[in-house]
Image (cartoon, rainbow, N blue to C red; front, side):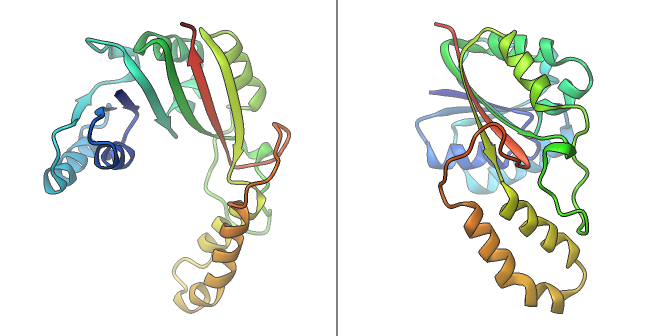
Length: 209
């Protein structure tokens, strides 16, 4: 299987996949040369010959052969917010073979995140709403779409509590059991719909064969 980690940064996902799936051929793509150098350094220490690194922007990259799987974790929303979402989804299609799969993790806009307003929260994207994402998917060349809310209310609150206690080790230690409990509760499988508030969308798309 040939997999692309698009917008890989330091390549954490690419390195994990290369280690867990030695029969796969992984390509790690990012325009940030410094991040790629750090990834290459870690790769050199870990070893393995099924991972290659490519420094290029999304719109400037075209592989020699199509991929079976494209993974984009917290990278697609930048181009969508910049008004290049339609071009981005065209490029996703160009990268994939017919029947290939695209997996996205996209942060939701602040209005859709179940954050506690009394606690800090990392600056979210402000432009990429669920409606905009759905419109982009509907206008793309993908035949099947599954959108799953990812990191729901307990997980968001766990992150907020953790952020609030940064720099205060005694408070952080005291709150650690609560953070652990909330994180565990968030991971319990239960029914969710597209109206369920969450911090991220986990999106699985398949290209038309």
